Image 1 (tube, rainbow, N blue to C red):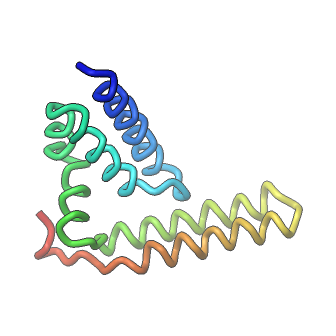
Image 2: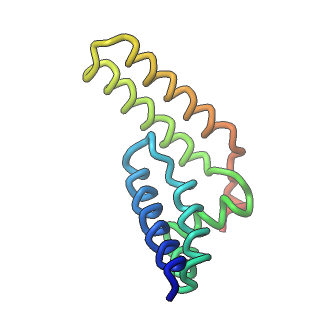
Length: 127
């Protein structure tokens, strides 16, 4: 294997790790990192690309987003609710400075707008 393929694989694994962490940390987006992992694996390893695309959990996110550019309603609700719960608790429990609280709330507003701007994936569209 060439150095370039190894680099794509390492970056794909790093992106996949970030996607998995993003499941639990609302400010870290999951789907974009999964899409990036798929693109990197596509260039670096057919085996890893096929594994990711056919993965029982991650594969459907990639396929649904690629085909429909949409997010399921339950995912939107969970993501936005978790985001605001973490941001508000962090802003008002951890920080005393109003400017930091304002920055965190501005980030939450931006991420919320980003999530909600995608159309909602209907049940009949899912694979």
